[in-house]
Length: 114
Length: 113
Image (cartoon, rainbow over all chains, first blue to last red; front, side, top):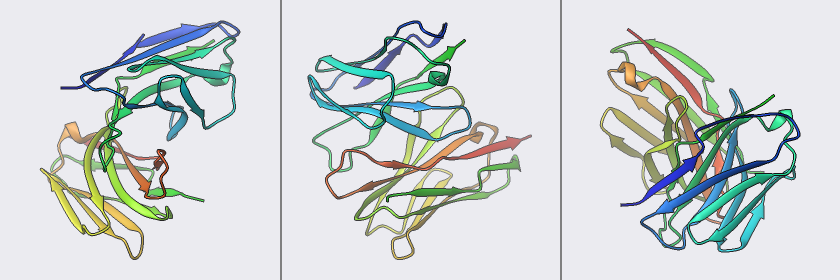
């Protein structure tokens, strides 16, 4: 069966510090991968998605970046965090061979920038 | 522009009661509509998925309906339980070849004992 992992679960960082959130998927190959952010009381906002190694598409211009160094690894990074980067970050994967393309979400990382 | 609107924004009901959540969308061309349940502090989990030809689909006490003509969907929860307290998110995917679904902001449901 497939599983998706995210870490850390919670993170408190000062403004201006760097960020690295990691997401890994097990039990599948060549998944589509997604990074979402959910601000308090708001809906899910798609940040990045990837259809293959090294292929990243950005949906929202910001001070965040994403990388996919391996087939089942997706990393969200920032060189300098802003207060507005606080939120709940969710990684998701979907099966490229599935017509319905259900997105399966990870447990999330709660980021607080102070 | 593809949009998904959900109502109500929040809802409080007593345990054992039924409730209905609404979703209106303007996504075109339509491929499928999915309802997710998101417990606080957790990732969303898919409850149901409906394609153009499906009007009703059930998953236990959850029943989703779809009216593709009016572009509306509802999620009915029967005999609510405390564990139903969560955010319910409507997500619509276009058949236009995009990998990106359109998410609603969700309805926050609180079930009180």
